[in-house]
Length: 315
Ligand code: ACO
Image (cartoon, rainbow, N blue to C red; front, top):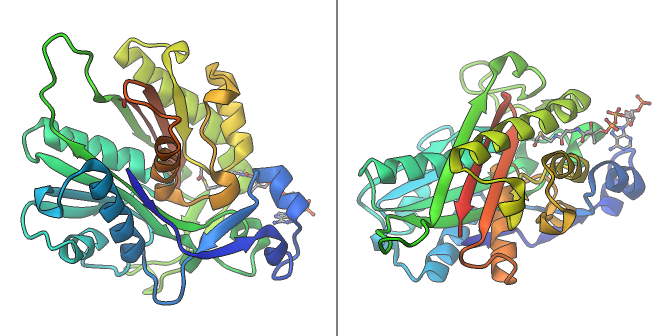
């Protein structure tokens, strides 16, 4: 695991001087107290590279050992080439494959499932799975209904093929479920792009509709992965959901029957960092000793599209 955050902390109190809002409004509706904002000249690839280097160090692996990079982002440095090849080049890797994956806030779960499937199919041996975003660059900083919610950051994991001793309980990704439904595409989107407007655009959202969908989507994919793996909510040691909003997380955990003390929460410090939020939360909870080897960890996310998904991981 590894993670990276920009230095600049933007608090709710500072935001209240920029738009008509207050710390109390933001905190009571979302749980967010502060978020990080990338510095001028600090790009998604820079955060991704730092997170990737930290993950490689933590895993005791060299960049040259990596033959796959799957980088989830909705805020790439450029339209192309992918931010993944930018990171690949900075890490000095010239073999294997690297590509970006675009599933907005569900990006990390999609990327982890994709890398897991490619390794299982024999297309790769060792992957860097990265979620990295600079959402501050696509926010309308005059729109109080969206600019208070998001932040910048990156997280990464190293995922590799492992044999495992006969009879040992399997580690790694045990089960995943990925979903999308494009009929909801107008509820959370960016109003620009290379083919449509030739601009980057700004994030637009119908917040209440996203909120309503989020909890039922979570329950849908989580129950699917529980059934696939033959486990129940009682077996879960840690629930590491996408960090969009504390109220969505609390309601989802309650509906799933997961106790509040098993929920990893970082939204208060990071805001919603889209594809980066799950690996940022995983890095925090593994480095502070909460998540231990053998723990069953449930990952879940929902985002623009709508897309949603869950993975069950034996640490
Ligand atoms: N500060 C003060 N007032 C605000 C702000 C703000 N930052 N934003 C909106 N308001 C006002 C609105 O204008 C409205 O005022 P009005 O009644 O005079 O029209 C009032 O607050 C209530 O607005 P609602 O949108 O009804 O507020 P709600 O309680 O639904 O909270 C929120 C809004 C926090 C966005 C909520 O709907 C939500 O969390 N939705 C989920 C969206 C989300 O988390 N998206 C993240 C991306 S998706 C994902 O990652 C899953």
